[in-house]
Length: 154
Figure (tube, helix red, strand yellow):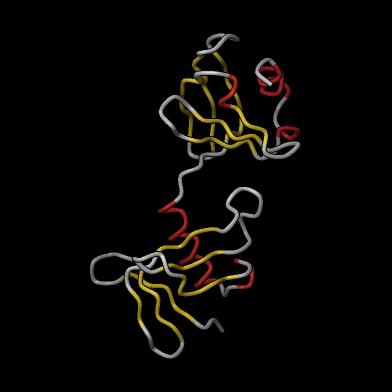
């Protein structure tokens, strides 16, 4: 059993109800390490940014609490994961990339090669011209065509 319940308040904001009945609203869910450990630590914060509750592992939560926390995280986070590179307009920058992400197909402008950062051996973070960040979780797991296109920029 969880020591908390995460629910919507009358205004549609997330509210945290602790096991002792204490209620906090609004609350925000934030991952501690969204890229390197997305299933790891999550903090529930009040409106002033003070931590109200720490969750060590999302997998330790009961299914209802897990889905509530995941929904709160999804509403706040926007980090599309690139699953496939469909094409690039040019191998020189700036270039327009056409990609398939976990949120659908899109195009973005890559201003320069410095906007591609390698976080680990296989994880890349790409910033587009509008400031949106895209992630490639596993470069080695991408299809041959995508890796070939990426090799031109790395």
